[in-house]
Image (cartoon, rainbow, N blue to C red):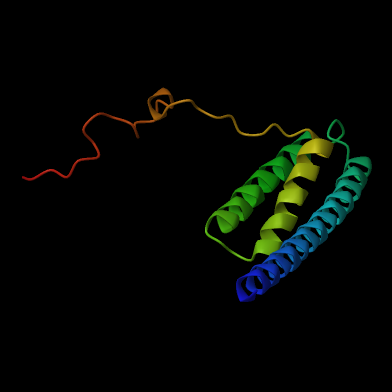
Length: 129
């Protein structure tokens, strides 16, 4: 009887934890969607006020600033900065990409195809002089 009671209590605890985790995930999803919607409105307004065809230099400058900002935010998310911030930033980056049409960076199947000298044979070993 004691073993059945313990199993029942463990089951109840697991159910409560699962419900709490689902509620937290739902809350984060709603906040992320709200951030996405705010960002979409912001970028649409920005394009209306200063269209790219009227000011191509300003457009390229903003595009460069956006790319740098995205890299900084991505690095912050990678190194484990505030989780809420990184989730908001991901929604903001997606909204910018959707509204402004910025292409995302490409991916490379192997480091040797990058052709930037990083994947040169023998460079990773420590050498003794």
